[in-house]
Amino acid sequence: MIDLYALYQRMHDNNIMLTFKGEVTFDLIDSILKIMEGRLEQLEDNRKTKKKVYNVLVECLQNLCHHIDFSEPGKIDPDDEHEYLRKSAILIIFSDDDAYHVATGNYIENESVNNLNGWLEEINSTTKDELRALYKRILDNEKFSDKGGGGLGFIDIARKSGQKLKYNFQKINDLYSFFSFQINIPKN
Image (cartoon, rainbow, N blue to C red; front, side, top):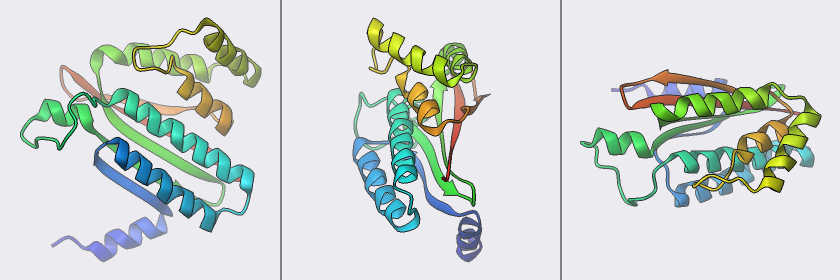
């Protein structure tokens, strides 16, 4: 039998506020946002920090939506690995003395890795002013992807957090890699 108390204690010791693994749906995202809004009201006194954490979380969840296949709503067939990889993700929100941390992970097609990696590298290589200009340039050019964002979500996350984006790609098989993403939002 799994030692739930040990798991609970590890989560408590690591200040894990929320964790989820499984199929991502719009209803789930709505629930997560409501839960976190309440948790932040309880835990964070600084209104500006609360707003930053919430806004970054919204962007992170929207990024998950853009990479998750919602074309066939419903439960994941556990025997269909391809379907599972298209719709499954992980989300962890935790805090420490210095910051709140939002971490997400989801499967992406290998053919998308180079473009996404290049985009994230470009964002991380910019200054605060360059990031603002890049954001405006994308808005002015109205170059949006089929999924809607044009990359604005990652720019927003970098701007709102004031931090560099942390990420990793782990090749799983010939079709998919696992994209891990983490952002830290400093406490004021």
